[in-house]
Image 1: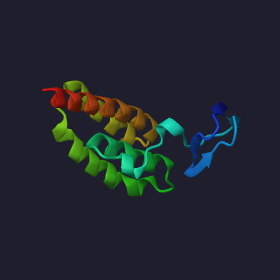
Image 2: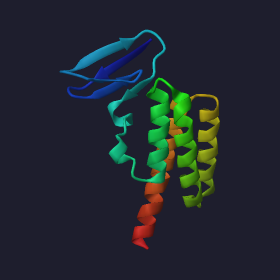
Image 3: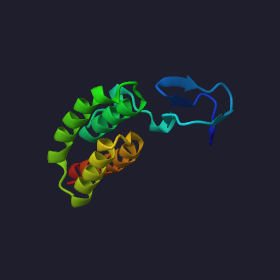
Length: 130
């Protein structure tokens, strides 16, 4: 059982369906479901870097009905991202991500992607500062 509290207007995806709270809402999920809260949801327009494209592809595999059809997008995004990484920790996060995806644990893959996005943002801010 999972208890979720949503603020007024907050989005939630459950098994691919986008829901939006009207007023403060408490939900109890009593069985297995693919869930993403508002801060975890990414729009296609927000996927504007290689790490974000990887996150978006993984998110679609997680919430979509046919995760297999999204695997090609995940592989393509990994191919774009890997050459941009110079940090061994970021490459290790990619390997961990690939391991999660290989066994179908897309939610844990999303957590690895958030770390990759943070690394990408830090690397970009260092490039801009230099």
